[in-house]
Length: 267
Ligand SMILES: Nc1ncnc2c1ncn2[C@@H]1O[C@H](COP(=O)(O)OP(=O)(O)OP(=O)(O)O)[C@@H](O)[C@H]1O
Image (tube, rainbow, N blue to C red; front, top):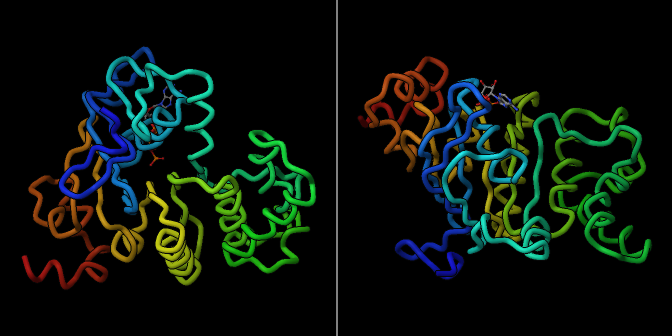
């Protein structure tokens, strides 16, 4: 069945992972992991350091091998993709890697154009116009287009990297710790930007984050990675009530108290 037309309740599933097992020769990192991502949501993905959040993201992006399991994305089974289907899927996905990962020798404009050059054959003028539009969309001033990454603040680098992730008008974006390294005001502004882009562009957002403020402010649903699988997923309220030591210390620890205070008192 075409997963894109399949729905759970009234929700379309854009990414569906079943029984996923990934290892690198030693003990497995992920085992029998299941996960669904629904169209139009902002999913926050959390887990202790080294639990496999990046491995999962890289596996879904086909940058890692898997030992077992199925992955459906936009209704297509990874195991039965033609070259053209792979390309079509890649074009519908945008990725913001941790630390931005911009090319230091390219200006912001040229960085944003990298996916366009890779996948499309467009006249230079059109690429320039499109890239400037993306740069404006992420809240950078027009003159930022001509700057090199070394000339940008941390917040500007994140925005430029987001503009590059949006280069091909993706349906699904993966953000790996998008607010790490930003001060609280910059992080809150970035969260607002992500929520606004989701609302205006209808994006689906998969966001790996350690940022409790982001989880609280913009995530519709949160998935917790633990014991090599998705231990629990759901709303913040559901997670606050979940009986697991790591989940409890993460969502009910000192740092989280100020953010989730109201929710904690209601438990
Ligand atoms: N290519 C690889 N080869 C061997 N082991 C790997 C490889 N990639 C990841 N690992 C291992 O998989 C485990 C999970 O790593 P991963 O980077 O996914 O963790 P993470 O949850 O993203 O952590 P953090 O929050 O610290 O970024 C680690 O033990 C790591 O050493």
